Amino acid sequence: NAGVTQTPKFQVLKTGQSMTLQCAQDMNHEYMSWYRQDPGMGLRLIHYSVGAGITDQGEVPNGYNVSRSTTEDFPLRLLSAAPSQTSVYFCASRTGLADNEQFFGPGTRLTVL
Amino acid sequence: GEDVEQSLFLSVREGDSSVINCTYTDSSSTYLYWYKQEPGAGLQLLTYIFSNMDMKQDQRLTVLLNKKDKHLSLRIADTQTGDSAIYFCAESSPNTDKLIFGTGTRLQVFP
Image (cartoon, rainbow over all chains, first blue to last red; front, side):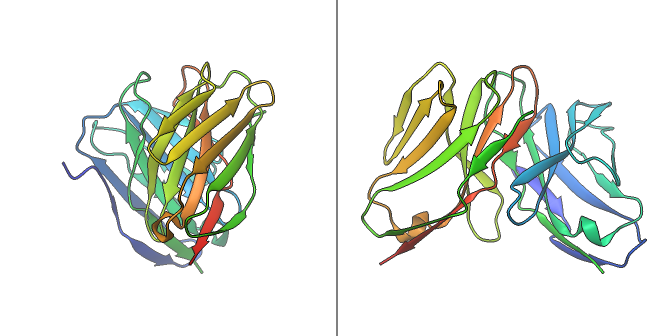
C-alpha cells in the first residue's frame, strides 16, 4: 500500500491564482480530512469527508472547496489564493469511528506571494 | 469550545526522561492521542488512550491522563537524539471525525 499520497510537495502561487491540492489513499478508508499547519497554531481542520459524496466544513473552511467523488480521492481547491493561505497542508485518512489511527500524507508546502 | 494547549519547547539531555504536557477543555473527549512529527514529514501516531483509562505504557512511552484536571502527559524514558521532533497531543469528541490538535511541543535532545 502507498498509504496517503499528496501532490505536489511544494507550490508557489501568486495572489488570485487557483489550484488543486491532490490527495489519494489506497487503504479503502471512509474518512478523509484536510488540515493546515501554521507555526505556533498546531493543525487546524479545513474540511473533512465521511464517505464518497459527503463532505463537511471544519474549523477554517473559508477560501477552500472540496469534493469526494470516489473513496480514494479527496482534492482541496483554492479558488483565489491569498497570502494568508501560505501554509503546510496535510491530508489524512482513517477507517470508521471505531478505528483510532489517522494516517497522514507527507504534506504540501504552499507559498502565496 | 474545544481547546488543546501545550508548551512550545522542551530541551533534555540524552538519556534523561522527557515529559511533555497537554491540557484540554472538552470533557466529553473519548480518545486522546500523541502524534510525532519529524522535520519535513507528516504526523505519525505514537500512542493513544481511552478517556476511561489513567495510564498506558508502551515500551519507552508512558501516557498519564488526569481526567479531573483535563491533563494529559507523555513521558519518554531514556530519551534519544532520534526522539527530537514536534509532539502533538490531540483529542477527539464522540461520533465525529474531528481531531483537535494542540500547538505542538518541539523536543530537542542534546548529547
